Amino acid sequence: MPDLVIDTTGLRKIYGSKVAVADLTLQVPKGEVFGFLGPNGAGKSTSVKMLLGLVAPTSGVARVLGQAPGHTPTMGRLGFLPEHFRFHEWLQAAEFLDLHGRLLGMDRVSRRHRIPELLDQVGLTDQARRPLAGFSKGMLQRVGLAQALLNNPELVFLDEPTSALDPFGRRLVRRIIRDLAARGTTVFLNSHLLGEVEATCDRVAFIKAGRVLRTLGLHDLEMGLLHVELRVNALTPELTSALQSLGLAFRVLEDGPSNAPRTSIAQSSAPAGSAQPLVRSNGSAAAVAEADGPTATLELTLTDEQLLPVIAERALASGARLYALTPRRLSLEQLFLDVVGTEDSGQ
Amino acid sequence: MRNITTITWLTFQEARRRRTALAALLLGLAFLAFFMTGFTLISNSLNRFDNPFTRTANYNLLLMAGLYVVHFLLIMLAIFASVDTVSGEISSHTIQTIVTKPVQRWQVLLGKWLGLAIMLVLYLGLLSGGMFLGVYLLTGYLPPNPVEGLLLLMLEALMLLSVSLLCGTRFSTLTNGLVLLMLYGVAFIGSWIEQIGTLFQSDAATTLGIVTSFILPVEAVWRRAAYLMETPLARNLPSPFSMGSVPSSAMVIYAVIYVVVAWLLAARAFAKRDL
Ligand SMILES: Nc1ncnc2c1ncn2[C@@H]1O[C@H](COP(=O)(O)OP(=O)(O)O)[C@@H](O)[C@H]1O
Ligand SMILES: [Mg+2]
Image (cartoon, rainbow over all chains, first blue to last red; front, side, top):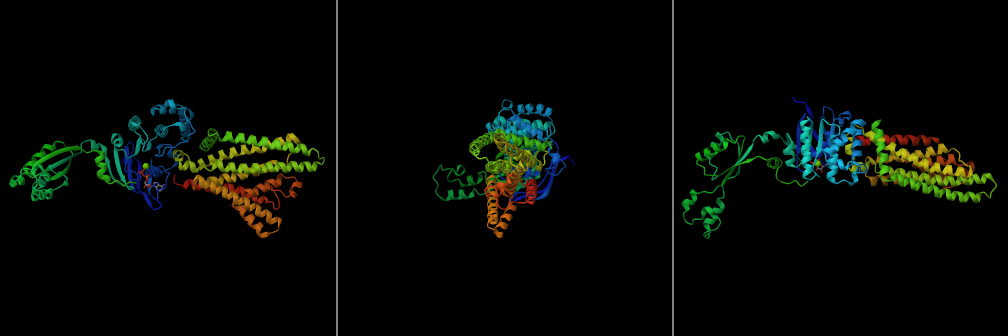
């Protein structure tokens, strides 16, 4: 079993009658960049706060770096950028970092060394002596990020770290996360921004309504899971068995009855040249029946591109008329919508 | 220990950077100047009397009036300086990066308490010390038991500080302020009920007043402080600063326990709270 940095079983948090996190069971191994993805109100922040000991779970157990959440000495090995990054605004940026360095137990020498380095890393060197009161939200988020990295933590929690950042800032965060990963730091990234997660994470968990719906390694995704859309005239049993013989799973997106409109067109003495291209030639009903339109759309998931021509051959051999065979690389966004569902919970 | 002093340092910084300390200092000095002007005018006219008893009684009366104001200012300052320190940082989420450091929550609370307590001590020292010194330089008069009296005034401020932190762990800043002012109001009225009850020998009223004192014994402690610093002559003259029944030293012990227990309850509530 790999060295687990986060290990939770059945974590649950209820606020009054509102279930914020229903059942969080999660393992994150050391060194992983873990994306925690979900729509607003899914329970991401509450989960992180439980892992940090800010919020007491209603039930369930959690271990963070082998200790109970909030265990005082262990907190010195963590970093945290909260979702609501508000700090003591009468402090200057460097003083703010110095305060947090002191709370982390860093000595004066290492603070003197580390603070300019971090200010430079987040692009705030010129603002070191400015009070935070005059900072924009993006600058505050940057200084908050620097704060989370002061102690070279073994595990960093970043709760929506780019929510206030411009594209430069976003790129900077990506770079920082990659640097952390290269140094073996475990990163727990809360986000609803798929691009950010796709670019940085090793693995993601999809969470909705306080429940992990699915976890998935993103390297598998990159290694070529393909979604293929197959459009044919009809889903015949021959085609089905041909696809099954290839060992392919498929999903029917659309099947059959575009019959209904066609019938109605046949009944009404439709004027020539009206929309339906395949029934255009008035009269030759036999030809129309032959030249059936594409009525079935299937979605196949494959792991190997080499299967594409084979699918085409088998489909044709089964007697199907092939209208389209479109490979699409499975994007995280598609996956997110598939897993989390398309309806907006609006929370 | 280092964590506690870091938070104490932070509390000082806040008062300094937000100019609270400066405003309090300037207003305090203005108050002292005003008091000394009044005192000088009156002591000049008192010099016409030869009777030293009359003179000291009047010096004492004036000084007690000044101290009464200091006591009131100190209570208000204790409330206003502390009312937002916990609840404000909770509602702004500023507290989240602090308590996720290798720091215990009680250390954060103690650091804040100490920082505010030290500022209140300094302020009390400035106002009452300035008054005592001014009066002494002008007339050579010092009231009896000045140190005990001032310690009791400080005890009042610490009571409000602890209660404020306790309420701040649960209530919003506004609610906290309201609760503190109401508690003070009850303590104030209770004290008057007790005194007037004693004056008119109504045991029921006296008992009600004493029981009210237990809710927040600030006025009770003030009356003990005033009693200690009054001249025996002034003790027998009814004045708004003291009269009738005098709280026993048991009340002082109760007040000390009150400070400690309120602080411990605050630490417990803060440790358990979701942030
Ligand atoms: N302190 C709280 N009191 C009541 N409800 C809360 C509190 N914090 C979060 N919630 C609710 O719990 C759910 C999850 O919130 P949160 O963890 O912030 O979601 P996310 O970070 O995924 O957007 C939301 O419906 C939110 O309204
Ligand atoms: Mg959130």
